[in-house]
Image (cartoon, rainbow, N blue to C red):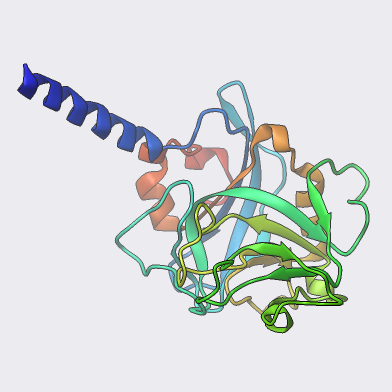
Length: 249
């Protein structure tokens, strides 16, 4: 009887682990970013909406830039392994995997007309910590800028930088943050058509505005970022949209 109980526990645990490595069926908005390979800084992105059990495109493919060194396995809702590097701090790679979308950070006091999503207006009080030794690693903090903590100068969020007019949080290494595995990952405006980021996904400003207007918290938006071959290898086991649904393959 004891052996049977242990076997049932093992099978249930195995099923739970397997189920946790699939896209939650409640997710109705999916951002899909595809790179040609692990070392590519260039790629394409598409916004997919789920109605019932059917995924449909809501935009033509959007040109994006990843990290200047390409992609690496990140820490998100679904964590991949094998076939590519692992994301670490300052490796100039964008995290690959499946990630929740967090808050939008902006210099404005309102989002563009038509947008309806949680946002935070960035001021001199805002900081994002990338210090590996900080207990606040990879976290957003609001401080008193008139009496800031010692770490504030290095961690304060930039003001007046056009590329950071809108920052859409990609929740990589966030639940919980593990020091050294990468921090401060966002969608933001690119600095030029051939100027990749240090690990974010960037695009032309009109395309980012389209993304900001499209997001809806009730639809639980997530980001799938993968090299082409990894998407084709994992889409069925992870419960991702059929590649035929997109124009990225």
